[in-house]
Length: 152
Image (tube, rainbow, N blue to C red; front, side):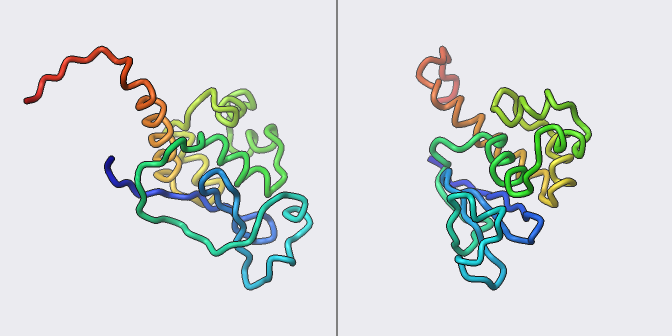
């Protein structure tokens, strides 16, 4: 299996606290504050304090989360944004955003740009997450594909 760069989305809540998702667990990096000093918006969750990792080199992820899950948990949740409010801010319909959040639609290049503007992230990170998820789904179907090998 080829090595890939794993990119984690990091979003800030209104208090400036960073949250990131790794292996379907949410971590919080607090700016110069002990774990006990979580703001009320974060204290009611099951997040734990750790140091942050933005990128690292890893094998291709096993069962990566859909980018919509990351968007919901790391960007909308900490800001306590409703789907309606987030859709308005992104300039898309509620139906479109809901489809992404619920894994029924993927992140398009245009949506990636919108998310990068709204959450101060890179469009590439959103698209890379989508590609990782799509590839994982496709690899699960590998044995059922009817393909003839053409290369020697």
